[in-house]
Length: 231
Image 1 (cartoon, rainbow, N blue to C red):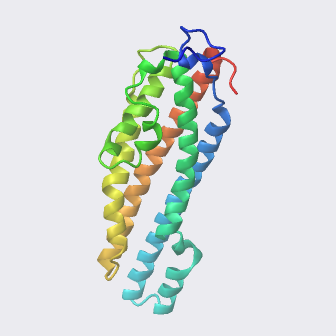
Image 2 (cartoon, helix red, strand yellow; image 1 turned 45 degrees about the vertical axis):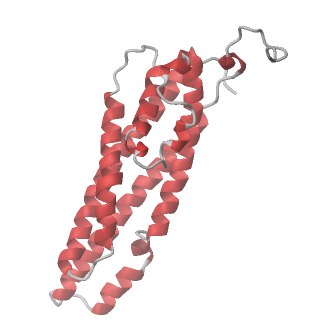
Image 3 (cartoon, rainbow, N blue to C red; image 1 turned 60 degrees about the vertical axis):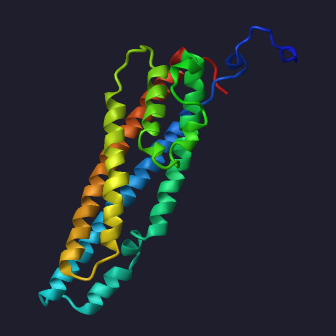
């Protein structure tokens, strides 16, 4: 059987060889990108309502078909395309995962790996694993939250509220809204899409603001002298 790794005591913990990670820069980037993603969602909602009012005016004889077609093809309307949405959220998501990975490593140094219900790989894998992505991301983030807090008994109300809003928006409202956006053959369908877009944006804005608070608070806990010198 091989002996202990050269240069490390036989009773050394694997975590002892690790050093804290810097989370402040990633936290700032997450805040900025989430804010941009939320602004994007607001603009999409504005574009959907503008299309509805133009369609309504056209049917009432107060706008021409040219007005409707022009609004439907301008830059504001194109913001709502599938690929623009994917790009905005993928970029924000990547930076969020960078922060979460670093925060997870730091929280292990603060409270030990046993403070987490899931292995490190779930920090990345939980978001794309079908079915598991309904609850494991909540476990991962709430464990980082608890393990980073100066008091281990800190409540997870903020995490629960964030995940409930995000899950409803992402897994329920967004698929319905995307389906509605693909069927805009009547004034009623255009109105339905605008209403669903408004609901989705409201949920995302609320969830996004809570996530920013979570990121900032964990970052403060981890940079308040509890982790040590980060690299």
